[in-house]
Length: 171
Image (cartoon, rainbow, N blue to C red; front, side, top):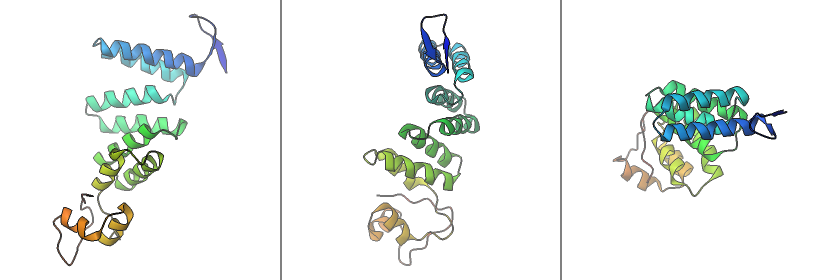
């Protein structure tokens, strides 16, 4: 799908949306957050899953302390583009903050597989609360650490009891 832009040659809707996102970024840098939001919304009328527009709107929602909207923006982006490290990493972090732990674990695991060198997903995966059926030994195996190190990092002594909802620090 292409269309003729008043600004020049034939372009795809995604390219036009990218121009609007860039213009919104310039407005945001000058302190015009309202104008930036308008441009990002216009970009999404052209390309509903435009990753950069969704990421910007998600960041803006977080600045407004609207966790639900921030998550909604990234979930919409994920429907259109699933192979982006920052998308999965950021969505996983937001899920942790919303205490949606199974979803957080899935997103952060995907991010880890996309970029195993980045410490971000590993840190946040360690913040995911334990769920029913989890054991200290299973968590140690999952994160590739010794059970004794995991126990020591979390102040646990034998018998190693991990309760549902308990957060474990992964050393």
